Image 1 (tube, rainbow, N blue to C red):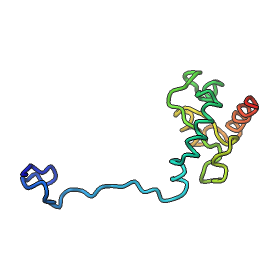
Image 2 (cartoon, one colour):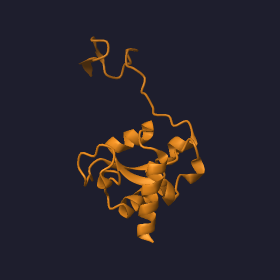
Image 3 (cartoon, one colour):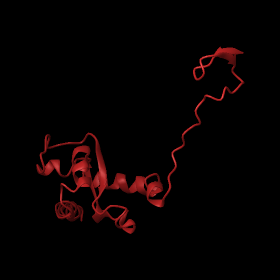
Length: 130
């Protein structure tokens, strides 16, 4: 069947490769740390931490670091206090994980929220659950 090719702007059979179509780009996960984010173990642990933290940003609920809304439950994610690059063995430890919003997650990743402060909040959450 003849069609107009969106890559070479000519009319040719759809079965013919004109040579202008770009090769598909595949996402390649090079190391173990990248693969970890897609494992069932991480998905379960992430959900467990979110439930422990009531699906709320733990920094916002304490009105720390330029909080805009105290009860932030949109755009929350689970943050590793000690990053995977620094200590991969602590990737599933409850005392290394905290639920925070996207705004505070960026601040934590940039080092604007000190580790001691994050660790203090995690310890409070862990003690509350036991």
